[in-house]
Image (tube, rainbow, N blue to C red; front, side, top):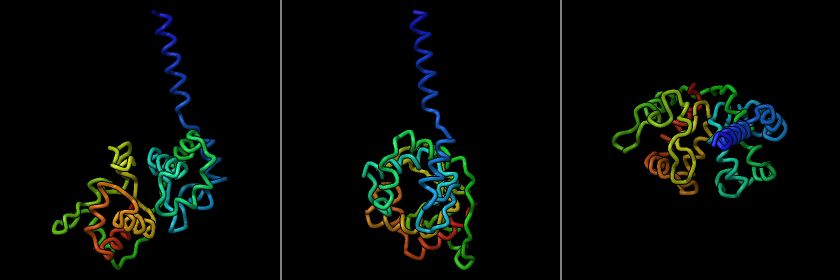
Amino acid sequence: MKRIFAALLVSLAATAATAAPDLEKGKEIAETICIACHAADGNSGIAIYPRLAGQHAAYTAKHAKDIRDRVRTWSLAESMVAMVETMTDEDIDNVSAFYEKQVSLAGEADAANLKAGELIYRGGIAEQKVPACMACHGPNGAGIPAASAAKDGVLAYPRISGQHKDYVVAQMQAFRSGERVHNMMAPVATRLTDQQIDDVANYIQGLR
């Protein structure tokens, strides 16, 4: 019995060691494959590509694997297939963990509609049955790691602070049109006007 127990402990330790992400390998992938669109530190300077710095590793990994496996097809997924199709789960987990450790930089928000966006983000719009964004994504947009799984299998509360306005708008439009399926975000997106989406996306871009 002691031998069996000892063997089990060794097996569990080996599994834990294998599961731990290799940040150095993740950095290498970021600097050779992901850098062109997402930047080496995850703070993409291209508005159509999401910033990955500080994003929860499980969220980034889920999306990358879905793109590789042709499960995610919306937005610019097709253009990313070539980047990830040869990556193993371990590769994706490594680079996702590396990006999670990077510091997310806030973008500059347009002062003209900043207040309108803040009101939606922090208070929602009661008459349109739109909840406050901060209820799920947090007051500073840091999200909630390992949150409950949404209908599409994606972790429900990603980090959004500092995310490009254009990217946020594109995702909200995808939720609204049904191109991107999500039982929490789709109803919210359909209740917001184009201007309100623009306002809150602008606020999110400057959030830190």
